Length: 396
Image (cartoon, rainbow, N blue to C red; front, side, top):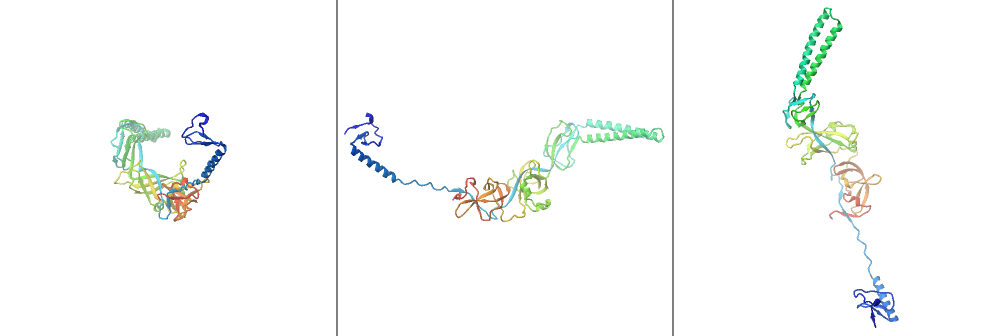
């Protein structure tokens, strides 16, 4: 039986081909064998049947296993977390004065340096007083002259020589001269700056021998006998304060501390000294001022960053149903309602649980309703969870 390649060319020996044409079959050596009609049909049928049987015996592919997402789970408990609020702020001195001369002139004396402590009345800076001394001397000389004139016209009036109008004018001129003397005396006194209270020179804003304008700030003087910090309360937090309390009563209902950023391992007890009842028109927050004693063993001074940490007041309706959870565990739907993903410990499936949110404290938020003691909620991967999804505990 003759062997020939398709189209007269040798077939690729590494390639096996099948054809539906009768009388042709592939051989390992390559090429096609031409067969008689009946034998070729029989051989082709056997090959086709074997292929069909082989395909029918292949097992069905197994579906991929269900992916169970690992998440962090928090079990709620009445003693699992304590509620505290935190507000950032900048430390300030108890009193601060940005001092300036009331008159213009050239600074000829600046005997203090930054950090110097002064008692009340201590000299801070002095202007050249010569111009003011000369002006005062002129005012005093003019007043003395007008006093003599007033006395002379008084004598003439008593003798019936001068009229009442002439005397009144002399008296008025003398009184005006006395006012000029008082103004000159004050201007001379204003050439010196004195400490308004016991304190420290916090900053010198100008240099010595410089000409300054009237009311141009030259020094910052502070009373650091105690410190204060001003915070801004959001509307939601302010609304939850117990109404009608005095500052003393409000201080007694909450423990308050100041934590300074540069002294992270210390807390300083503080108390409220001022509490605004009107919101800032721009930020819509309520300003509150707190004071605390200046520590003697560490350096804490005005300008440092800090935060106020306070335990929340116990308000009507608060109780064992209030919990603190991580902020990221709380979600919101399209309608603006809040919810968390509750975990069924038996089936390990997650379900949406509507909750009522309270104040935020750092990275935690208060839950006012919707959860109970012992409930378990998801705290990680909450954005990827779906209703009824199975999960497992992270690390298990």
